[in-house]
Image (cartoon, rainbow, N blue to C red; front, side, top):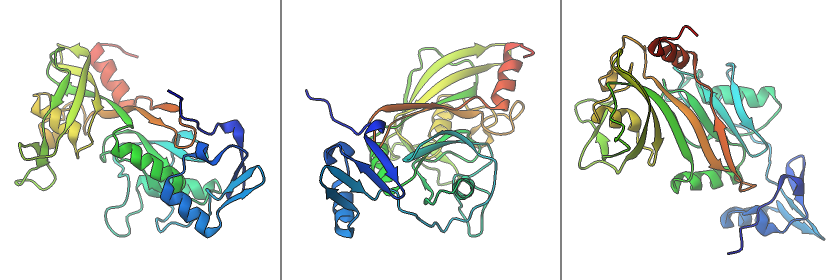
Length: 292
């Protein structure tokens, strides 16, 4: 089988809003509708052996910039991964709300002289920490959204949970639906949406009745990990909405550890890790008996 050809970083240069390359157009993997739109607007131009594509137009966004310190884990001309702190929503949910990750990203773009719309590819719960992926242009958004639909973006989490997890627990396959008795909750329901979570036991702390697990989403339902671990009898520490005790943590002890995705332009697999939060380090030190 002949491997797919992708553009490499050495095969193009950026001139303002334009990508310029001598590589064949097929190596850009432009979605058909986007290529047609670009050509119709005069933003896809072939001149001799050079191809010019206006992939980086200056854009404005209705999301207002609101400065918050932002930890950027990865960034290039096509995408960016930022580390979301606990207690911050990914995007506004009510009018005039500005203290969200979207507003912080808008501020980062403005402060660094970049004119992009804020395009998140996936979400994290308000108190879940870890990497969030952003597309910097329409091309990247189309490619990454497609990857999400095809379940080709891998999200790996770590969590402290109640109880001693059976090392034989590797997979939770249980549909998730809305809880008609509680607006914010979800629950395992025969009529819910298909949901699969993969579980790996990392370590147990018998004296505290706590386990540290690694979790990988096969699907992306609302509150999926929280619902599934509660269903398995191991609610997350601090997750009072789903039966977790708050004696050790004030909110759910869930952290996105790794994000793995195929770069929208280059095709290579990217792995972006997010360091453990202060809370996670403190919990591990407490349960392991370390003073570090």
